Structures are given as structure tokens and as C-alpha cells.
Length: 114
Image (cartoon, rainbow, N blue to C red; front, side):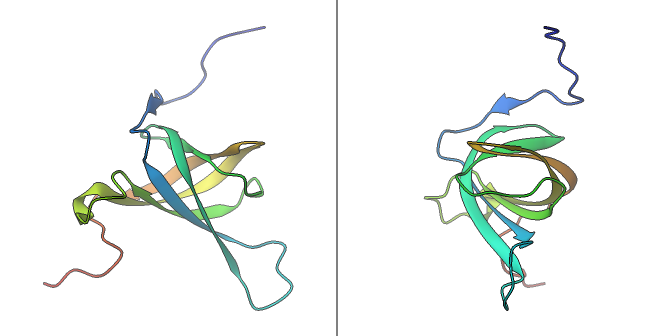
């Protein structure tokens, strides 16, 4: 077996309680529900992507909107990041997501006043 790491970015473990929510198109929907919202725990993270631990089934190649909450107990919006990505790997315990863009501005889920 070849143990060469072919990843472009080094993965790092994150704080144990780092949560993320992803929204993906629901390919199984036959009704009015167009997207699925899936919550999970971020297992590892890099500049290129992340692995989200979840029991939910998400099809590979799905496009995802991602909110990463680095300290869910905090009321500070400075600890959240919004990103977009593609599901590249589906495993029994979660999904691998490759980032396509990351919003580096502070994200709180609401528009900031100017």
C-alpha cells in the first residue's frame, strides 16, 4: 500500500466542539423541500477543505454552503466562517468537502450595518 499523501493542503485537527452546518440540494426530495440542512462536528480542516462528522447521507458532487462555528457557545460572530464547497467523499461517519470559496469577512448569519 502506498502511504503518500496526495493532498494539496495539510489537514489539522480543530477544537473538539467546532461545529458546522452545511446546506445542499436534496436529490431525494419529491416535495417542496429543495435543500437539506445538515449539522455535524468538524473533524479536520485545511485551507482546501474539511471533513464533517455526520450520520446524514450526502451525495458526492453535491454543492454545499457551509457555516463553520469555531466556538458554538460564544455569542461572538468573529468565530464563524462562511464557505462554499463540493462534497468529494462520502464515508460512513461523515463527508469530505473541498472548498471552492471562503468568505474571510466576519460572518454572523445576518447582514452587518454599514
